[in-house]
Image 1 (tube, rainbow, N blue to C red):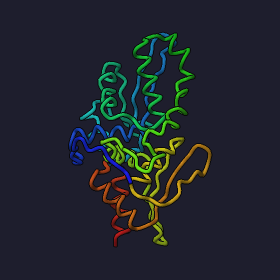
Image 2 (cartoon, one colour; image 1 turned 180 degrees about the vertical axis):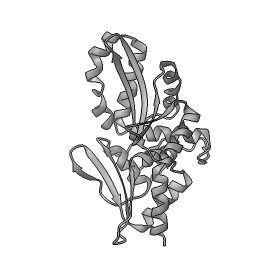
Image 3 (cartoon, rainbow, N blue to C red; image 1 turned 90 degrees about the vertical axis):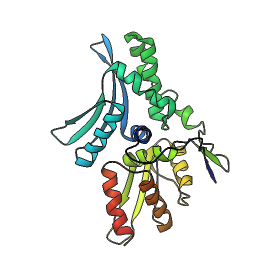
Image 4 (spheres, rainbow, N blue to C red; image 1 turned 120 degrees about the vertical axis):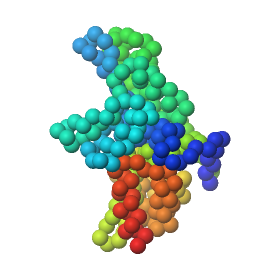
Length: 256
């Protein structure tokens, strides 16, 4: 069984600011990057970024995120890519406060955020240069920390998990439509098997987690009952970009 902490209710409307914030955290966990770089070894530069393919649904999603969280939406890569980006140090300080309310759940992004926060605190180019190669030193500790309590018969999900999951599905989920009608949904993540197991148990998926190549874990669902659970979730907690279009096409064909 799974237990969700429901200390507060968050409306799932895609126009609700709190929903947008949590969805963004899930999207950052999947497609985002939290960066610290240097300018000619003289000063530090901070950057939050999400890079997507340049289609209208992704553009509209990033514009919606920028209105709530701030940042700029820029078309790049000869028009093939679109990015949401924040470069201003003071704006980043304000934005990362969202992670204090709705913490990141992937080990890589947790490490990136902690490194950025330390760089902000130290404000030292020398400290940055001495420590940048150790940014992910604690990643294995996070992976093995059993943050969802999955070693027990029941586990506790954070109270924002449902909204976060839709942002993560927007980044990492795939709806497959096949000519043989063997339609499916899959989702995967590097390193963080605990996260795939949490998603598996949340949807009550019976399939085994796959490990097709080193450090990558995924799960694929074909069973109609479970696919309908996933579809229902994604309409209750709306996808906002390209995956919303994929979901609509998938649902039309899957539930003919």
